[in-house]
Amino acid sequence: MSFVHPEKPLYLIRMEWCQEKTGFDQTATSQNPGAMMKRYPPAESLNLLVGRFSVLGVSLLLSAWGATDHGLTQSITLDTMIFSPHYYTDLQKALAEADNVWYLDLSMQKLRTIPEDIGKLKNLKYLDLSFNLVTSLPAAIAHLPKLEVLKISGLYNMPHLPEFLYEMKHLRELHALDLRVPPEELQRLKEALPNTRVILTKEDLMKLQREKQK
Image 1 (cartoon, one colour):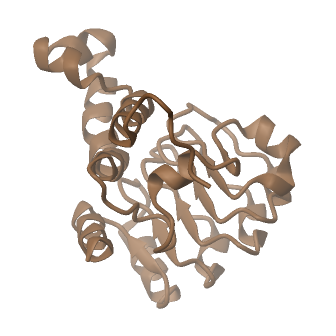
Image 2 (cartoon, helix red, strand yellow; image 1 turned 180 degrees about the vertical axis):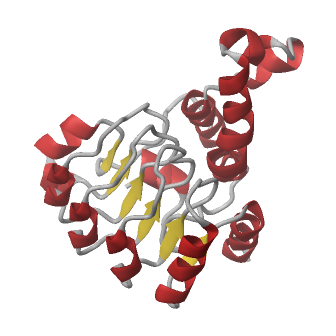
């Protein structure tokens, strides 16, 4: 059941959540375009602008205007997910309440490792690991039986795709934008998962968004 704040309209709650998630204050930056550059070093600012808005930002901001989130089943919208009791952004809390976790968003948390314990989340449907500092992913991810959507975009420190990814034929969507792995590995991934929507470019992402809005 979605939570609706008694005093705030849903669109405002969505916008506030998007602002918090992306770290982007729309009002402040419109009044002061240099605000983000002052808050972050130049390289990180570029990553924030390109990474957050090209991948996460597209999803979140479109959702703020009522679009269906591209990373969920047709009947679940972004606001349903983030206000769900099954939605988590803290890994340790998620592991402590493993049976209750359906959606786990660990994006942009500067994580350097993902523990094998993530395999305990047997009810997990949606896992976002985007824009972290990891160099590899645990094989336990391959053994999450209910996982439908996996996001690994922006894992710049990961030199190669893990072998188990090529076997995850049960995935409905795999988001792998802005990776620095060899191009032939990405091509192999698409060929290995013919029934999975593999998102490798912003164009792929926007096309998927358009389809979900029809």
